[in-house]
Every structure is written in C-alpha cells, then in structure tokens.
Length: 369
Image (tube, helix red, strand yellow):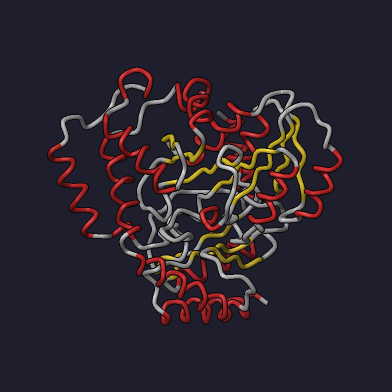
C-alpha cells in the first residue's frame, strides 16, 4: 500500500494526478454535441419505456439470455441507419474498438495505424498479436509508401483511423483512405465516435458521404457522445458480424446492454434523423468557433496547445474560475509536450457563449505569458 501511495504522490508532483469532480459551469468539455443529454422529449420517452418494460436488467451475456427482440430490432435499425447490411451492439466504444481489433486481426496480419489514434484502438492493436506500423498523423503519402513496401505481405492488411480525431478534431481524407484500402486489398476500420450524429445526411458519420466496398470497410460508432445514450455499434458485413459474435471476447464475455439503454440508443438515433436543425445549428456553431479560434478546419473538437502540465492546469483552472468548464488534457492521453485544453462545440451554445469562451481564453493566455 505504501508503494501505491508513493506512486500517487509522484503523479501529484509531476502534475499528472487526476480526481473526479462534477461538471459545473458553461459546458465546453463534454461530448454532448447535439445537446440531447437534457432533451425533455427523450427523457419522457425513456421514462415511459422503463415503467412499462418487463425486465430492468438482462443479467447475462448476449449469447446466454441477454438478447431480446429489442436488441435485434435495434441492430436491424442501426444497420439501415448506416446503410449497412449488418450492425452489432457492444457495451461501449472502448470495448467495441478493442473487441473488433482483437477478434479480426491475427498474428500473420499487418496493421497500419494513424499516430494519433485513440487509446482503445492502440490497445486493440497491441493486444491482437498482429504486426503493426504507425504512420504520421493524417500523412496518407507516408501510408501509401508503407502499403507499397508491404504490398506482398501474405496476411490480411488493415488500415485503422478515426474519422474525427478526439483530441484535436482533425479530419482525415476518407476518400483517399478508401481508395488506398481498395487499391491495396486492405480492410479499413474507421472509428466514427466523434462523427456519429454530426456528419452525414442523417448523422450516420463521415463515411456515409462516400462510396465504399461494404465488405471491406468496418465502422465503429458510439452512443455515448452526440447520441447522448450509451453503448456502441459496429457497421459491417453479415460475415464480419457473424465472426464477431463467435470470436470477440469483448462481445461474448460481458453482460448485454440492458433494454432501457438499447431503447435510449434507438430512440435518440431516430430523433436525430428527424431533427436536422440540431446538426445544422451545431455546424453553424462550428463555423463560428473556427473563425474565433483562427482554425482552418471546421470541427466539433478544438484544441489549444499549452505545453507543460503546470501551465495547462493553470489555464484550465483559470477558465473554470470564470464559469467555463474545460479540462486540461495531459500525458498519457497526449504525448509529453503536447498538453492542451480540449474544447467541444455544441448545438446548445450561443454566439455569446462562444465569444465569452474565446475572450477569456485570450485574457488567460495573456496572464500566463
């Protein structure tokens, strides 16, 4: 126990200690991009379902007794939503990323991974046993060179990326990634966590704007961000779904999502399809924030680089003292020297909210310097 306390003391000394605090102030840190978390209509729908639902909890895994008709109906709906032949529910986005990669990628396979991929993707890649190569962030010329170098690789090849990178909000060139996968007989795995609900004609994610081989591309979506629900779902071919059901430990050996969570995911996804004004408002806010932040790309995630733990913590605390809820992002979430304030833009923000944020960011940076 002394060793554990010593390690905690070391984290505090290095400015890496973390603690749990409730969210307060003007929300610029959560992933409630569409503002659905406080939606009264959706809360009423969920309350009515819970009052009338026979089972509160599944109490077993999907393969034992945890699959209900609602699970199957929701997977069918989500497949249609994504314009895919199949969809499979997982317990969380993290679990889905690890579960897909560790099931599909074998020792003889080769993975090409973006440098800034999420920790869950990195964990899945490292734990699957396949060889992996990391290409510089969004450097598709380097990726193309690597694919050419390993053109004769005997095992399967996988390209792994996010469609909106969670810490910086950068957007990869999906059209080129699809072409690279197609031209090199590689699977493309795309984490759409921060794109689901935001991009696409109905909020399906960024992939929906492109034509691609449905047997070659696997998309992973979370319910816990713009959809203001929980769980995750994988868009894939029927063969991939069948394979995951039979081999993915993160699907097989975990309790099924409870019916009320599945219902919430279903209803919230239905809701965003018929309420495009939320997405439109979010994109208007994204454009306004882009101008205020002097960014070149519109995104729901903005980052403000402040190297050093003490500096980024001080800036975060200063903004929170001004009723602005932001968080300092530190190592190991980002590399050392790449510390930042992560800012999320939401449909519920007003222009005054965004102006207030960036005015105080500018003032606080002036005080820091």
